[in-house]
Image (cartoon, rainbow, N blue to C red; front, side):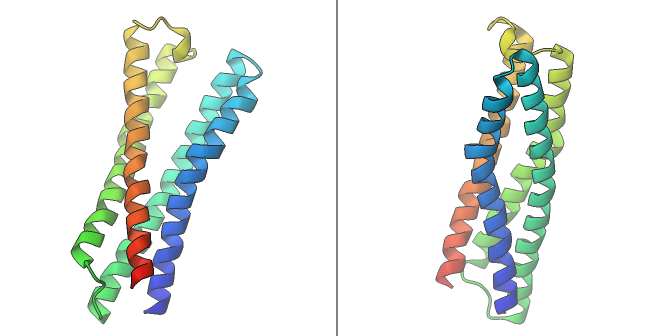
Length: 161
């Protein structure tokens, strides 16, 4: 049981910690440093951040598998974790949000960026392409909040067990 809990806690720490570091440090610093080189640098920053997020999604899928497997194994082997159904639903929702962001929204953002061919922010604010890109970017960012909030809730429950 201890190994299963440890694996779940480690996966949660990687997932939640990775999201926090990515959103608060990696992405902003990448845009700050590369963006200082001008529009070309900002395009590079967008490419780097997009690739980091794509790879982090893969790590997140693995973390979700570990968490869900740990919960299921603990339920079968007993004793069943407190609020098992709620915890499983949260972990599944975290995975769904991440998968939607990574499999659906990410490619749409990449496609929109390629179609624009320059920084979306360089387009007039009324340009439909800029508006669509902004909408997708906000959705992607919002979707990442679900795993962050859900992961914090799961960490709380794991620590209480």
